[in-house]
Length: 65
Image (cartoon, rainbow, N blue to C red; front, side, top):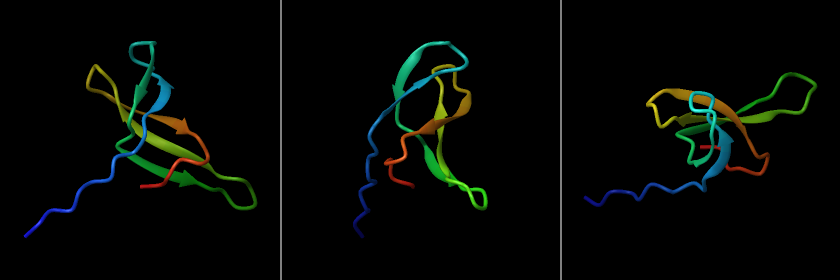
């Protein structure tokens, strides 16, 4: 049985809160926060070089996984 190829998402330039550097990372997961009667924002889950996870805003045109 053939495996499906995982789609690769483009990297996003974000500021790593643990190292303080601006790095390009591919988010592990992306979702949209959309409160009632307001415009939503897209949030991504990233893994730092230190091994810790953090969340950051991604561009509005970024695909949701």
